[in-house]
Length: 148
Image 1 (cartoon, helix red, strand yellow):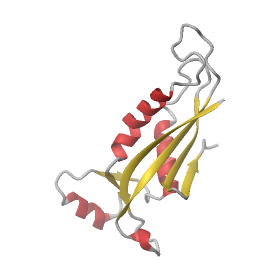
Image 2 (spheres, one colour; image 1 turned 60 degrees about the vertical axis):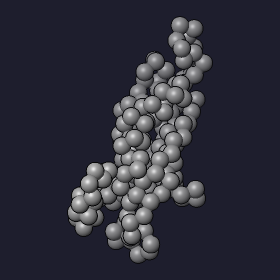
Image 3 (cartoon, one colour; image 1 turned 135 degrees about the horizontal axis):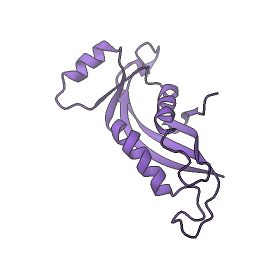
Image 4 (cartoon, one colour; image 1 turned 120 degrees about the vertical axis):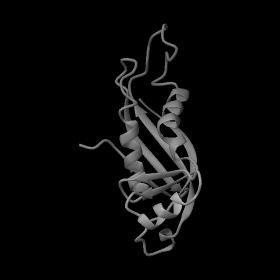
């Protein structure tokens, strides 16, 4: 069985070497879909009886470990020195320096890698993170899947 929880957040970024408008500082209303796979829990003693995982738990984990960190932040490649210097000049600016360029593809992969260890077999139902889908716009998204 698969379940999916969607969360949204706002963040800025830029793609420094891009040949179009994306090389400029700009922002998006991102949507993050977290798809989990596992068996349905069948235990009258478990509050999650009949579920793979409670959707509120899916949300809480994602918010605490990813969404709250990225929401209303500027996501920037750690080696994008001009932007890092600019952002550091702004008092109390929320900046997240990443190891790679903040494309939808890279952000989806980073999100998957952060979240995968957190969505593990919590109830003996073989729970696992199956996919992270990150929408950069309503019409453009990237899917990160387990590697290997």
